[in-house]
Length: 282
Image (cartoon, rainbow, N blue to C red; front, side, top):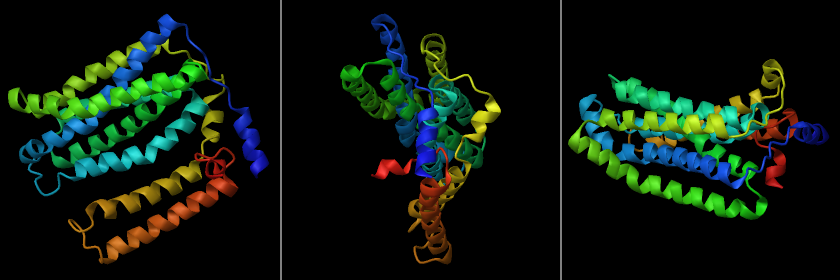
């Protein structure tokens, strides 16, 4: 089985393409902006939640906005790396940005709490992709010697997003509406999409879509998704929404733990192209 996994890994197309400095700086600026937008979105919402809860009459459940985003982000962060190996960095990165744009627009249009929680989950799915793929793309377009420097600058962009997100959200609450905060992020995502579409090289291998779908680790995705959902929901809501010793919390923790064990076995023994290769732990 290990030989088959290694053969599948070697069959993946090398997507390295070192860019000239002029094109690199423009692409890198687009990557930094997309990462900045993602973390402004993730951290700015903490300031808007009390206002959103009052507007949507969700004072008792508003914390699920953060929980849904966290669960979705955790589920898809690792998956995006493997999807980019199969379908190509560029197309998956642009998909994540487009999803972030749509999710933020829909968050601003939400008319009730349930709609808002679902769309925050979509934003979490998109955020996990943007966060992981920006770092992966940098590894493809710069030399190994320069990689640390450029990824460090992206880390600074991440930190800047963490800092300015709450201030930006507070400004919109005071001067306009919480909905405008999400509507601002959508066109900024479109700008990053335009830069990425024209300047990020597309080095994906020309393979049929159906064949690429068959290479996805479906069983691993299913098992890991169940494990993450069934663990994070009781951990996030335990002691507030649920009693720690309730049958629901205990059963969800047991099912989640067992699912993660099954996930490890699938990655080790079953998957031809595992989402999380067992060699990562050796």
